[in-house]
Length: 372
Image (cartoon, rainbow, N blue to C red; front, side, top):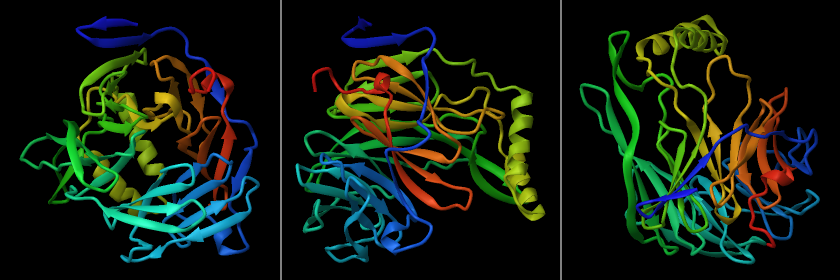
């Protein structure tokens, strides 16, 4: 750790400890048959509450489900619509207090506040809101980070900016906290028609709200920028990764994977048309995703390369920027949330039945401060 012109720089070196999930979760929600409230469809977020109960956000009704710590349904609420107690397309859920929740409704462009037991409180429209908003998380003071890619189209490859907006809990825009290159798009010809695609393997920018900071990655370096909530750079967190050079072998492997992912001859031809039309970046991206962790910690999803093992791999950092280890998820699992003592993953089985699973965190990857 060192200081450079008032910006802290944390550099992580050496071997990274490796971890895997236990075979069985502490709790698994979801069933193949039975009452519809126990069947999982289109789950986009889940949150463990202080008493061990779990709030699950689905984009198929029932939309919001509350489960007891032993997996029994406690309550369901929210139907599809635009009314005060309805949701257009719920996307994220956060704790808004000891016994209340705030839910980000993407389609209705608003925040919905509910009692954790299912009682409706209020809705707060987000104004003004960009055309493609993505929930970036909730700060400790209740303000919300929303990110958006502002699409820029030209006759050549151009970086579309990623902007970060901070909204108050009542939905008013407070400020723009960052504006960085987000996604490099350019025109390509596919069968005589122009489409705008990204370069193969090129990194993207992304951001998540931490307790009282923002984790921002540009996707082109083994580095996460930690910003103050007003956008000022406070710290750089770096680690040592693999050589990023893209080789012809990588391109060939990726092309084969595109073919294998298609199930019909027509789909294979279409996959190859799109793959062959887009140019190839010279270097791989570095971060494919971010998740907030307790006490200012964060997790970084490593960029998967062609021929790498299937399954997400995440690097866990504590609030000081120390790299704690790497966690490998099975191929059928997606990391949804990092909690104080457990992580939540959505999973599918061989029949494509969807589940929400809570796994105990390895003690070495717990990011909460000592004594809390």
